[in-house]
Image 1 (spheres, rainbow over the protein chains, first blue to last red):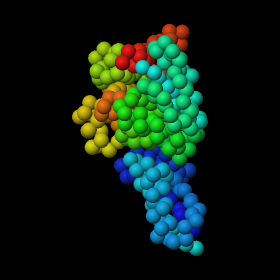
Image 2 (image 1 turned 90 degrees about the horizontal axis):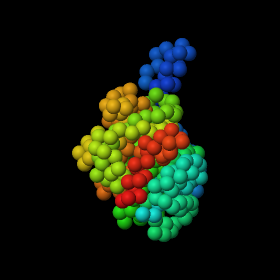
Image 3 (image 1 turned 180 degrees about the vertical axis):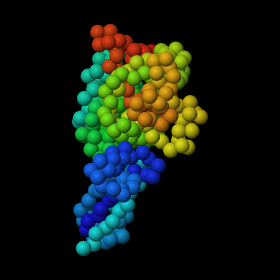
Image 4 (image 1 turned 60 degrees about the horizontal axis):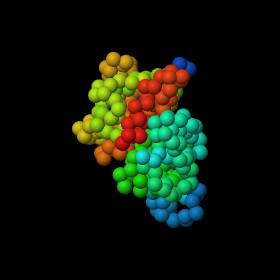
Length: 81
Length: 227
């Protein structure tokens, strides 16, 4: 079972990388782009077969290591297919 | 006081740190590998700068989980001294031994330049050899040194007088221009509540010899040796 953990900087935490990407997009002529935020995606291949237990396990991993909750928030999506 | 340097793969500033410690303490520090779990009778643990584990995931995130960190935590719990410089500071925040986090520099660029640090208190084992209000020069070399903590944490750090150093001009004035990495409230270094753990981004260990351009950073190490 695959769990996808998306880690983003919390609202209110300066994201200079996202800003730079936004400026680059504007420089390339892409109009109408508002705020850009950059984060990371971590895919976990889990032996667990129960979706809710997989969700809980991935959340525990995110809290312990994958995200630094001082500055980052995360969400976990379990792919059952 | 017996100093030791904790080494993680990817750390590259341990030799400068060893020189600074040996000059002040009169004997070489013990080198502690990241897999060791017995720190023996060390009184001071130094986490030097570099790029532990290639800065994977986040600067210091992997090192904070290394086997040696259990012994480092026990050392801190016993009231032992810990100094974290640059990546070492990042590791201490990732291990939650100091509050806050170090974000990407506000200007996105890696900054390799001298800065000036204003000493915010001189009644600690780390800062006792500076005069109150002292300003000293220190090289900085980091891409992620932008100190961040939420407003309540910053208020607590200031209220409890746990800010050790602030980025300032050579004259000691805290200005936006002097705070090149964009750190919250110009914070360059912070102390634990028991004043035994210090983390800072710039490198005092790189200015401990006139042949290398000055001795501005030496008071940190002589003060520790005398503590």
